[in-house]
Amino acid sequence: MKPTIFAPLLALAVVMGGGCSNYKAPTSVPPGPPPPPPPPEFVTFATLGDSISIADKLTEFRTALGGTLNAPNTPPADSGRREINWDGVPAALTDVDTFPATFFNVNSKRGAVYATPGTGLRVDSTAFASINPDFAAQFSTFSPKKLFMPVGSNKLEVRFQLAGTTTAGLVKGFGAVFADVDRAGSTTIEFFDAHDVRIALLTAPNHSDAHLLSFVGAVFPAPVVARVVITSGDAPLTATAVDISAGGTQDLVVMDDFVYGEPRQVSSAEVSVGNDFFRSTNGSQNPAVDTIDAGGTVTWTWSAAGSHTVQSTGIPPAVFRNSVVMSHAGDSYAVTFIHPGTYDYDCAIHGAAMTGRIVVR
Image 1 (cartoon, rainbow, N blue to C red):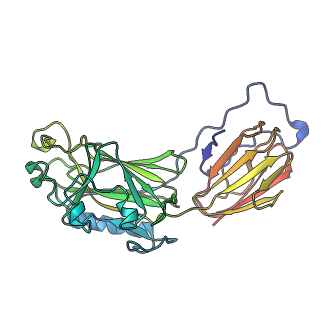
Image 2: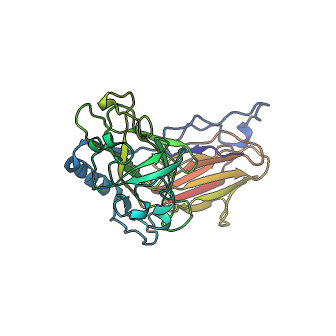
């Protein structure tokens, strides 16, 4: 059974009474999982203006990500950030529609891999005037002078991997600079966690007159972002496309710099739920004690039929959302822990006979 993922928040009231004598067998229709909690909190950074005002906001964003800039081709790190500004892309891969999707984790190792529903990717040194001469006056740059856009689409997916490897990674935040966002809502960044749950949707600031730059990004308390999906304007660039600022019907937008947290492999844990025990894969039992990184997930899996719950017993803020009573072998429940701390739990049915502890570092 696919686990249900829940982020920490205040624990629900105890699902059942404390002892087995108070427990009533589940009905023939087992209760469903509790409603999903709100996504993890995050801080949004957004601005609209020229390259100077964009730079000021980017400085704030970098500070929030923490650490220093990790240079291309350096090995995976435990902190810091990576940046992509397109300007170092070789001439042979510029102004063509075949820019490699893995370039920034194979040729220049920075932990970012791209995908698009379109037909290719393009790094352009002409402000895309090589596609349509009218674009030359439309798209300004933040870091001169190359810009980026999918070919045949206005959508781009960025997946994160440990720098120079194929191992999936999580980042603490991501932000992007856009050129010429005219229409409100035309340009967005969607953030997804490791379980492919959307945890944030940001909209880039727009303007109504001069051709300005926009920046938007989000920073989370811990590395939780596995991928982002960028919608850059209303439509792809073509030789006949006309921007709404020039009398057209579609907002045409392109991308400049990407800034994101260092992709990290966050530790998680698996706990077996039996009659009557919580047992970690490390061998600890009643209490099952696991240590994970902030942003990691603990998954409890029922090893045999038997009615149990996962119930947080800590003192706020070291609490998380409880499960309902589950009874079938293979049932599972999962919690993603964002904040460091020690989180104690037991079974609402069996109390002190079944206990565990999660240490989040």
